Image 1 (spheres, rainbow, N blue to C red):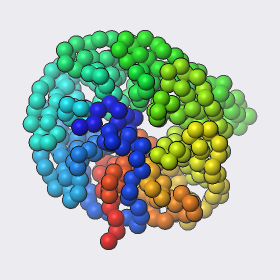
Image 2: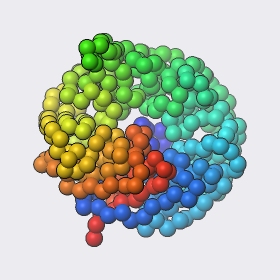
Image 3: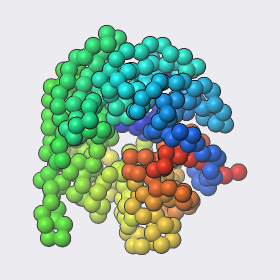
Length: 370
């Protein structure tokens, strides 16, 4: 089963790592919806199975091909739950307990106390699990040995429930409003810290503003690609923190930056689409749609993107799911859901299915139209 190398791509198998484009292409149709007691986080998809955690404390596994339920597991009473796939099983955090179950049949393998990890923003690597703990605005990050069940290090910093990523033996995360840092995986010591405030500086209605990291970045081949609120995309060497290149874009909030396995970075807002060469930062494509996306396809404030072979698959804040053609830049398919889609609920395209979680905790599963 997939381990920490699947990050920062919750919902992706280790084989994908967002480095393999989905073969899914439009037109699509809605195959099924799931809600029950509310789906608490994006699905984890691996090995032909889809794993869902529900707010009620039930974890369910479904067959990826036909949606048949394979097993369910009751994690016990509590108020919070999160899931993470590791090499040795499916991890479930439920109010201070870390439970490991067999993803094949849902049987419990072991459980022990944990520092209330939020597994949706955790990484697993080399026998360690690193994640945020506590409810403070300033997160406390804890590294715990999986086999010895002991805490190895903890330190304050970062932003509560903010995503972290893993690159070159370090966890990378936002450490403040304007900074990103890399901490050594085994010790928690700072490898480097980068302030992007000056790099992404801009003016808003005449007021000077400092740049802000839009998440923890995407790690690919020892490089971290980072969107910066401030019209910038950066390529950062994971081992040193050196900025290899930076590119100005027409998009202020580069929050939906996505990596394409052909070596391209894509970003989209309500008016612009930009494709960059991941190696150099050079602009491959830049399109100004004007009002066409909003008027013709009802796409307003695109929240997050995934990559198909021929299309960019995305969703917007108001509930429109869509496929944007990479070559023609036309919206070849779209469908409006009943609820909005928050930024963190990006569409997950795996195999022949597209999974979208809306703000009402309903999971929508799309597939090819027959």
